[in-house]
Amino acid sequence: AQKVTQAQTEISVVEKEDVTLDCVYETRDTTYYLFWYKQPPSGELVFLIRRNSFDEQNEISGRYSWNFQKSTSSFNFTITASQVVDSAVYFCASNTGFQKLVFGTGTRLLVSP
Amino acid sequence: DSGVTQTPKHLITATGQRVTLRCSPRSGDLSVYWYQQSLDQGLQFLIQYYNGEERAKGNILERFSAQQFPDLHSELNLSSLELGDSALYFCASSGGLRMNTEAFFGQGTRLTVV
Image (cartoon, rainbow over all chains, first blue to last red; front, side, top):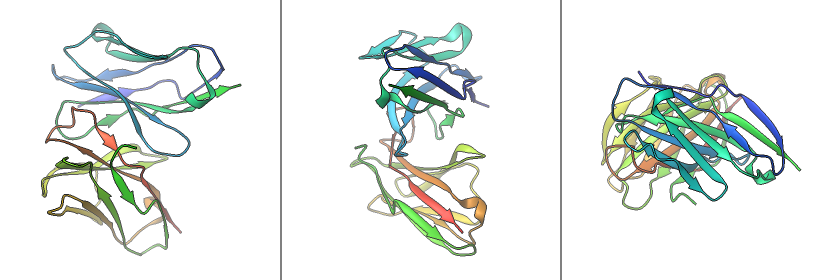
């Protein structure tokens, strides 16, 4: 069975600091997909990224970057030069390509001015 | 805007009642998924429909049911409501059977049972 662990319950940083959100996944499948979602205070789930198990290239999108390491079963998310608008709960999730997403418990990020 | 529309956004109802949550998927998406987000259980998969047919079930209670209509919108019916059913209910849609593409979620329906 799949499992996603986000050990950091809450992280507080000051604006402009870099912050990394950890995600560790467990799966027996060789083909799987990893996702990150952002849930701002308004409540919606905003898709950030999807990665498949065959693509270990790191990805950068503006201030966001993702580090996928199969050797440690991790898919960490870094926000560079954080901003107040980055304050949200961030969820890591995985699936095998079929059916349901399995979500981690989320990491609440608080960015203060 | 994800393109997935959920109504209503908020719902307050009493225990024992029945409610219907509605979801319109993104244009062209055939799969609809329902998720429940509660404080104690986190985000949990409930059920998936693909082109009108049920394809997968998660931890969905027997008091809950869903369907997908020919126009591809979906409804989640919750009956005999209990206080513990208070949660944020999300609908998501994707193009095919698999949720390995970008999966887009609606804004959710916040259900409060009093």
